[in-house]
Image 1 (tube, helix red, strand yellow):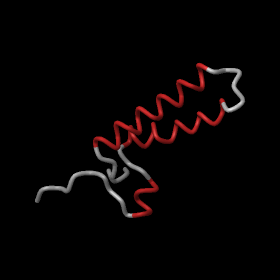
Image 2 (image 1 turned 135 degrees about the horizontal axis):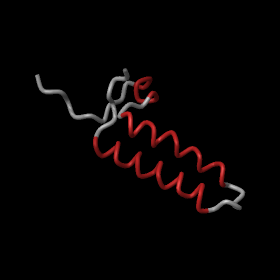
Image 3 (image 1 turned 120 degrees about the vertical axis):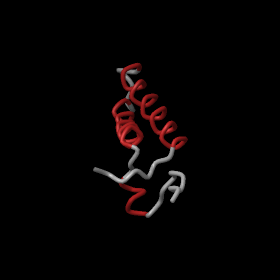
Length: 68
């Protein structure tokens, strides 16, 4: 489907950041900035899929080089 371009450490950081932001959405229901935390869906999704559209556009990959 998508070419993998997110490495292991990058992937873990994205998943953690996404989960933290989404957790804040539910922990602070009365905060004025609450809906900004929904941006956590993006790093969570790219971390789970191991593919980042922005990396594809910029030609970046944090995956280790493939062995021949």
